[in-house]
Image 1: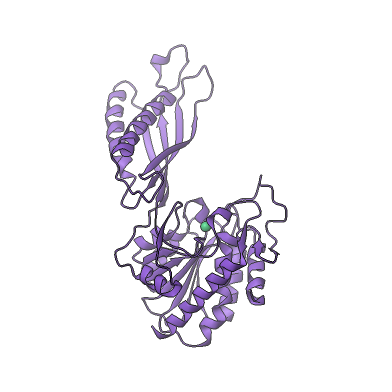
Image 2 (image 1 turned 180 degrees about the horizontal axis):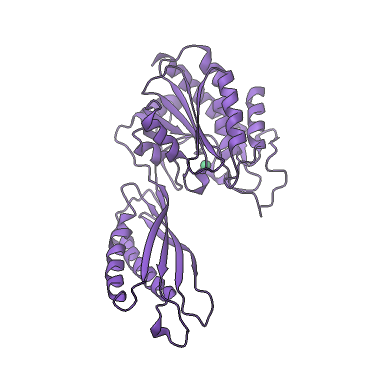
Length: 385
Ligand SMILES: [Zn+2]
């Protein structure tokens, strides 16, 4: 790997961009670097006032129909992991680079940035864009704000390549992740007279039981996609919080759950029958307890990547990488969001997901070389197409 790439990766790893913290130092460093090399840069701040931003950049003509190289700038936490070195200091060995984010996914971003001087050296026919997002690891929360700006004021690209670590395989489908909070309100009182109140924990348990019942129907009846394990949409309750003391009727209960949808699946599979159940149950309860309530609030919405028939992205990447096969990915990415924003989307990047989120996260140089070769072919293609 050349010195320019190593220098950039070293800088990127040095920014502690764990999702809970700001990514602005990294974003401004990348923005300055890109401007120095003649790219047009748009920094799209988080709309909720968090000290975070997405970055959009264009090299080449300012027109629709370009190709986006997309990566997230945040990384997962390192607390509690047995790292043998400082996670935010790049270490280079003969065969690999070690550091938080090397494979997921600052290695890919560094490859893109190191090639900017080449991209800018001669005119491109097709614009190349970068989309660098925040809060991906929290459930793809940042990218939608960038995609909104693309819909409103930035040029509309034709193809999006999400450089998550696939071992340079072509990821054309993955499940989507949706998460929700369900908030149940009852009426408190002394536990010796439970009939005078309404126990929110018990009501929450009824709702959970109904969800489990609906889910059994999904397990049995599908829809199915055998390229995934499990081959159907799945559902999990991950956290419950309710009540205050053993001798008080619980007034409130909250629980968090997620729904992982196969391509073509949607959380409505559980939400529609669940809402019908809730409406009926609240109708009964409110006759004696008018404050009874059950509210479902969406938290995360990262849609599945749906395989497209004769996809522009798939055709281009098969041409540029020589790959013939495509894969289903077991994890969600921002690709489904880019797809819903009207782009042909595919996931392909250096490194392996098995090395992501781990202590001593690393990326092999052989993977980076493959990613670099792919990007160079993409630049050559964009000069003449
Ligand atoms: Zn990632």
